[in-house]
Length: 290
Image (cartoon, rainbow, N blue to C red):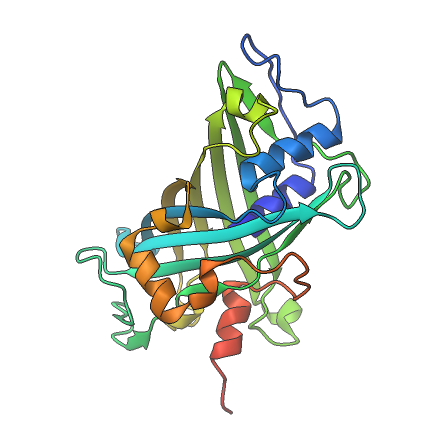
C-alpha cells in the first residue's frame, strides 16, 4: 500500500494547501517542512521508533455481465521505522517496512488456507500478501528535480491527503515478449489519509494519530488461477495508525506469531534489499515446472 502512495507523492501529484483559521502554525513553505509533516504522518520523527498501521475491509469481484461478488474479508498491517537518509540535512529520510494482508472467509472470519474458485470450480491454495521489505527513500526533490510538495489539504482543524495512483507496467510474472502480446500489470490504488492539524503542527509531537482509507482495483490475483478470464478484483478498506503493536487484532497477532514472526518488528534501517510486491512474492514461492 505505502509503496504506491510514495510513488504518487514523488511523481509530483498536484498539491493543494488551503490555510484556514486555527491552522496558522502549520508551515509548509519549504520541502523540509513538507518532509517533516509526511514523516510525522507516516512514522515518527524519532529515529528507529517502530510504528504499526492496521486496516481491514472486503474484497469484491467485478465481471462483465454479472453482479459483483463479495469474495473475501481482508486484514492488513504494516510495521515501519524511519531514520535519516545518509548525511542529508534537508529533512530527507528513509523508511523501512514490512507489510501483510490476509484473506478471510467473509461470513465466518476464518483465515483462508484454500479457496473454492466459483468460476473455475477449482480449489486453490490461498497466498496471503507478505511483502518484505517495502522500503522508501524520501528526499527534498523528486526524480525530475522538483521540490518536494505534500498533497495536503487543510480544512478547519483537519488535514487530509487524497491520492489516486494508476499503475501500468511490465508484469513480473509475464514473459520477455509481453510488450508484443500483452501481459502488463494494471491496477489503481486510492488513498485518503486524515487527522488533526494541531497534532501535525505541534513541534513537541514526533508523530500524529492518523486514519486511512484504501481502495484498490487490479487484475485477478495470480493464486486465483483465473488465467485470461475477464474481470477484476477490488478492495475497500479503512484503518489507522495504532498506538502500539499489541493493538492489532487477535487474528493478525496470531498469524504473525505462528506464520510471520519477522513481522513483529520492522526491517533494520540499513536494509538494502530490493522491495517485494505481491507479484514478485508469488513468483518466489510458486515455482513453475515445464
